[in-house]
Image 1 (cartoon, rainbow, N blue to C red):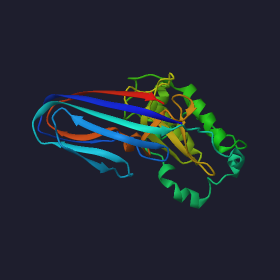
Image 2: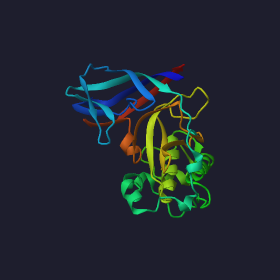
Image 3: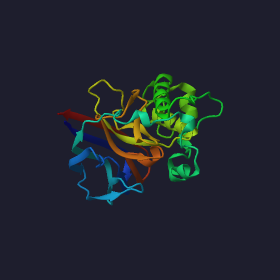
Image 4: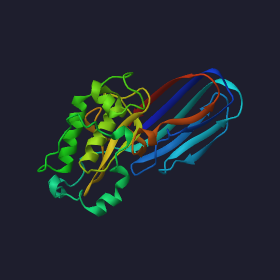
Length: 282
């Protein structure tokens, strides 16, 4: 059984004064992987600017464009259709799992192979003054990560507008509120502190089942467990990532996966509005 999805991404940008020049990169195209097949991709902008595909440093497909004319408003729209195989995140041999303290996480070759997703970044650094989740040594890594998923979900209240894309965990844990990006960063920080490789995932979430998620792109995590591989955890909703999670990219933190990056040349500020719609049918 497969599921068909249509994703519509929209961004509107209005600038206080006319710009002289601008460059943008969009990381919004669903990735092509086992079980996720991109059927079509369309991208347009209100100025009719030419654009091109590129590949970001981590190997994910992006869209780049440049404006060399004066303008004060611009909007972007991406429409993607894809097909996903139904995913059962528990489809693995649980008998192959061993207690956490007996696992391979402390071995040098393991740390070298996964060093990118073991290093803390500014957005995934835990404040020293805060008590954090502790792993149980006699539970498996999977059981500990499931418990961590639930702990983050209960600790933080989902609330938009109280944090921003540059918010560190000290700010988030001071108010115990945030959006999916903050839930993901906290999960990643605790997993890495216990020696488990963890990475930030950006994508889309079909919210038809009442899931929490941003009106823009959703964020969740992936953790590496020997004998299983990379497994997705969504602490915002306290569940394992499955069919309704449409992956775009992964990285160390939000900075690697931002939907839009750019440089604008001109005076004054700007106002941006974003919207994502995900539709589904079998």
